[in-house]
Length: 556
Image (tube, rainbow, N blue to C red; front, side, top):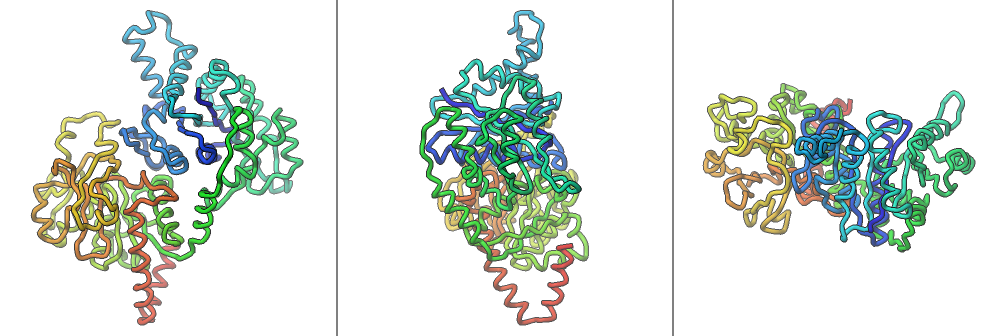
């Protein structure tokens, strides 16, 4: 029987439960254990697929087409295991299942109630991750203890321990120890109150993880231990760090995995060497490189979380320190576009939906093409690169996507055939992993080092193959297609160092110790471009002044 670890949070949201759970997963994997993870979210949406990126951040997509919480991205990056839609359950999806069962008559006419029917469904969602291939299941409970919407989840995980045995469950509670400026002290009272609230729901935490700006003193740890009835060594301090990939090492030094293994009666040695090597490599990544992210939702950086992490991973590989320049797409639509982008070493055009900012994304693609700036387009990014090429190279001035102009005379991007009868928004796009066959000798084939690849998708619109012959004749190679050759999955400019677009979302498969090939090649090309750019600036001091002023304006 696998062991179960439940991670809850108190005091405030955004404390890093997901990173705590992910770090713990990595530590247990380094002990040779087989780990899987899941997120229980309290919101009533069936999944995050239709939620506003400004509110929720990115939607992470699994191989089997699940639209899930962004924390699953952290899970996959840390434990390096592909997860499924079963790893994310929301209140909405749980109630949907319960009501469907009631309609089928599964409850034999009984009154349907939160207890036992909703809590039983929650426990079923937890158990569906159990298999002979798993040693530990880590479950993060979203929300904050004290919120009314998480009460069914707390009751379910309370019952779960009694059902599977106390030695098979460990409760980890993440809290905040704030520093109060006027008093000049760190305060434990919020943690005490949070644990009291959790205990009132029948759950005694085995471990308390305390987030803080500065390290906790031994006396404060002893106070929390005494007031919250946990072992002193089970009070774990999680100090703020600049590099999230340090967290597993910090937690190990604090004894987190050791305490949990004792609670669960796990006896397995740990080998930290590979992860220490990774952290050392990260710390040695100092060569600067400026990457412009031309986005629609740049006010919330979490909307592009996996893209940013993928850029960092590629930077680790090349020993580069990535500086992301956040550029709102509308800001590069006008006359100042060139000035905003002149100091960049590379450009990423990420995905998104809707017409806002599209002309700015198209202009960014044009700037990168004309100035040989390395550029990677993701999903919508590939589509705007195609539109740009059709307009400015083929001379099809009114070329567009039918998503933005249904009446365009040149729909180089068009709604997929199997999407034309779709009316519901949630879970109806082309979702999940699909294979693509790469053209031998192409940039993408050389990057991947294999002829057939699998990438995750999330889109309704696709490259219009009716224009393929004309576009390829003009120099834009369709370098990857679906196995049946009906869908274009990759495009690249033949006479450009790196101007590549993919209909997929490769950012979902990048790992800190194994960067995605497309991001790796983008950063490699950007470093070369930077060397050339700075050499040119040194030869033209007037231009250098202009570029410096531009750089300052971007920073502002």
